[in-house]
Image (tube, rainbow over all chains, first blue to last red; front, side, top):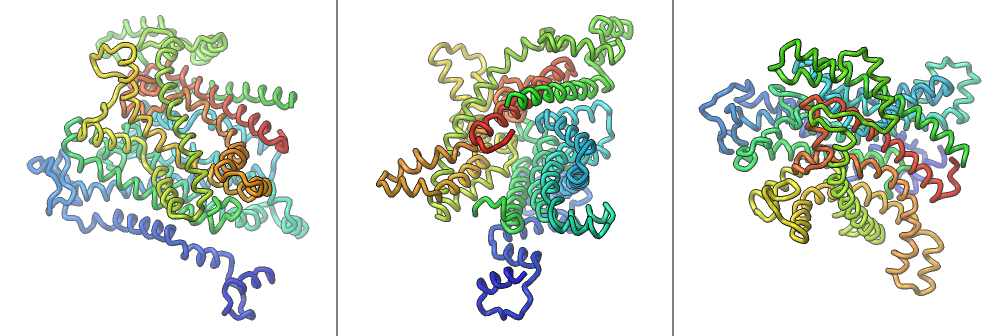
Length: 311
Length: 317
C-alpha cells in the first residue's frame, strides 16, 4: 500500500501524503475518464441505448401501422429516413430494431460470461476430472468455426419450426453457446495461477468453505478481466446476430433487428434505388460496435495492464 | 517432443470422433429430410426414396455407415446434386482457395507495413489515424460493407463487376479470362483484407514495439546501419516470429471459404455451396463439409502449437 501511495503522490504532487489513496476501482475510473476516445465511445453507447429504448416512445409511428399508400417514400421532413415497403417509418423501426439488437448483444454476452466464468472457476480450482470434462467440451465446441456453427444452429431452429417470437431468445442462447468456451479458458488459466497465491493459502488455513473461496476470494480477482472481455464481446455478439439475421437464420420479421432490416438489400430494386432502407441499419451496427470496441479497449488499458496493447 | 506429438494426435482423433457424433446427430435428429423437399411425391414414393438413400434405417446404424465411409475417405453422396460430396468439394474449393490465398497475402503484406510504421512512429498522427481505422475495420459487419461497396463501385460508379467470378455469358479465354477473374476478385478481396488487416496489424505493432527496445536493435543502429535495414532486417524478423503461430489458425480459413463474402459477391466457392445446401436440406454435403472444417481446424491448432514451439524453444510443449 505504501508503495502505491508514493506512486500516486509522485503523479499528483499537490496531494497531501496523509490522504489515503483512492481505491483501485476509483483509480481505474479516474484513469479511464482521461481517455477521450474511450469516453466518447461510452457516451455514444449510452446515447444509443437511450435513443433505442426511449426514442420510439416519442415517435408518432411507434405502433408500426401498415399504410401501403405511403410505401417506399424517400427521406423527408415527415419521415426522416423514409418509409419501407409497408409504409412504416424507417427511423422508428431502426430504433425499435436497436432495442432487439442491443438486448441480444448484452444478454447473450451476460449469459456466456456467466456460464464461462462459473465453469472456468470450477475447472481451474478443482482441476482433475471436472476440469478435464469441461475443457474437453470446450475443445469440442472449438472444432467447428463460429460462422458455420451459427448457421447450422440457425438452420436447425428453422427446421424445428421455432415460433418467431421465441427465436429471439434462442439466438441469445446460440450466441452464448459459442461464446462461453473462450471465457472459460481465460478464467481457468487465471485460476490456475491465482489459486497458488498466498492469500488463498491464508483462506485455506482459515478453513473457509469452497463456495466462499471461489466466489468471494477468487472471483473478485478475475472481475477486471471479465469486464474487459465482456465489453469487447458485446460488439462481437451484435455483429454475429446481425449476420445471422441478415441471412434469415436469426431474428425474423416482424420482430425487427438491424440485421434483418438490411435484408431489404436482397431485393434488387431496394438495393439500387432505395438505399435509405438498408444503409442506416448498417451504419447503426457499425457505429455502435465501434463505440463499444473503443470503450472496451480503453477499459483494457486501465484494468488489465499486462495485456495492454502498448498504448 | 515425440511423445507429445503422439499424445496430441491421439487426442485429436478423440476430439474429431466427438465432433463427428455432434455433427451427425445434430443433422439426423432434425425433422425433415431431403425427400420432404419435393411436395409432389406420394407417400409411397417417399418411402421408396428413403429406402434407396438409406434414410429409414435406425440412426445409430446410419452413423456407423457414415463414419465407416468417412474413414475410407468417402464423404458421402450429395442428394441434391447427385454427385459424391468429395467431388463437389473439389470442384468448388479451389475458387474459395484462390480468393482466400490472395486475400491472406495482401492482409499480411499490408499488416506488416502498417505494424512496423505505426510502431516506429508511435503516437504520431499517422499512428493515431491508423489505430482509428483499425477499430473501424474491426467493427464493420462484413455483409454490410460488401453490399455497400457493390452499391458504390458496381451500381453507381460502374467500374467494377457486382459479383460472380466471370461476367455472365462471357467466353473469354487465356489472358482475357485471367483479367476478368481478377476484376471480379477486387471487391471480395478488398473486403476480406479490410476485415482481417486490423487485428493483425495491431498484433504486429505491439510485437515490433517490444523488439525495438531491445539491445541488439540499438547495437544495429550503433553500427551505423540504415534505419530501414534496422527495422526490416533486424527488428522485423524477431517481431514476426510469434506471428507464425497464426499461420496454423489461417489454415482452415484458406479452404473453408467465407460463407458471408461468397454469398454477397456471388462467388462460386464452397461457402456459397454450403449455404445453398441448407435450403435444399442436402445433409450429406452439409455433414461432410462440416466434418472437413473440423478436421482442418484441429490440424491448424496442432500446427500452430508446433510452430509456436519451433519459434521459441523456451516454450515447453
